[in-house]
Image 1: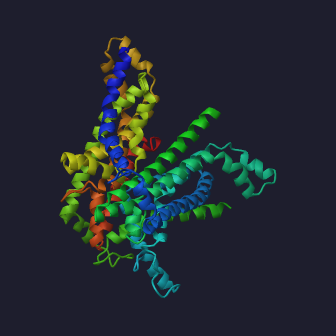
Image 2 (image 1 turned 60 degrees about the vertical axis):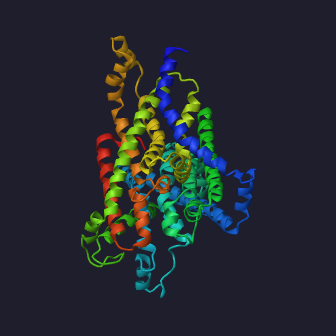
Image 3 (image 1 turned 45 degrees about the vertical axis):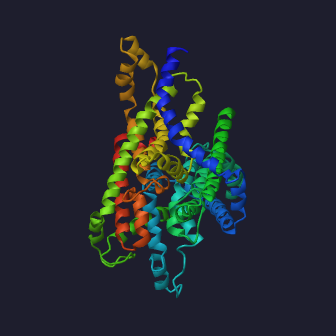
Length: 276
Length: 257
């Protein structure tokens, strides 16, 4: 081994060992626990989890919310990103700053605001009743709708920012060219913009999807124990019932999803480089 | 078309930023319970936030944790990023994957794993466990941001310094480090904000009287419905705004996010 290789290893060893021993080892032990029951190695915990109706509900709800949040954020995100590219450069800077700013603020603070807005005596209900649209307060808080609204607000910037950067790399003339050739706005979006900005959509989509699946604060505050998602279920199973078997299964599901989507991202990033 | 676009943008920004305005006003309420529009304006709940003992101690813990864990992550991360950028390290790609692994693992799993397989078996204090968890979560950011700065710095200026008679360490300290200073500052700010706002990993790592500020807020709001959390949320939003504005002015933080 040459001197520079040894020096490189010496520099990199502390961080690597720290993560291996202090992080990956405990996480690995926790995950392996999901595959063990009193009878030794088995898939019993998974069978148990996927045959309990309540857990299945939570499982499907988590994916349903993740998918709808991602789909709605993608549609609104495209409109927003396209509208931003059509503003003047100075406005573009300000709008991007307004998109980045919420990302820096505590998710607890961001989510708590919706409690003030959506609650029984909250801003929305007061406004609706004053205008006379409803007689009784609407029940929004502690429903899937409330969690959906909270998640959209939390992850919308993470969808728009990658879309915006891939739209800005679009060749300048493709949209006017399409218009001149007589294509409708819909055809231009579907056949020109979408294929050319697919990368931004994939990045924004995975950030939003994985973020929604693994969100804790939003479902905890806006959904409570009525609208459990996988993370809030995990917390509840451990803190209320010391049920480490279910917790282990949820951990395996969450981490498998997270690794799969990150792997997909990496694949797309490398095929892009190869294509160039 | 143009007008429709502008109206749509205004609606989106209202949706993103409006809740912060609402929560600031709700926190300035003079009334007893959480409401918007507030029942009169006063600073009573803002003052109340500073009187609540648990908020004071959890704020101190979060602040110390944010600074300590970020510094530790940088102390481990800077040499690692340097080695990855400048040396031909055996198994470099695998090591890079290990170093960025904490970003892929959902926080709540980190908290539970450390609680069950580190804190309980070894009798480690909760504060130390929080420090370990946050440091591990921040190392990927430290490595990534510092790597990006190193890639923008030509390696030959270091070689030049060595040819002129400095040692390798001297060249790093006197040539490389000053040139990547902005990247390190950016990594520090991003790391601090990430740690300060972190919830899921810290959730299980709490003990009697020991909780980070956001976790303490979650615990408080379970039993209280007064405007103090709104006031505190408003204060935190203002704090983040100040940090980001100052950082943007000094370093152009947005290049690193």
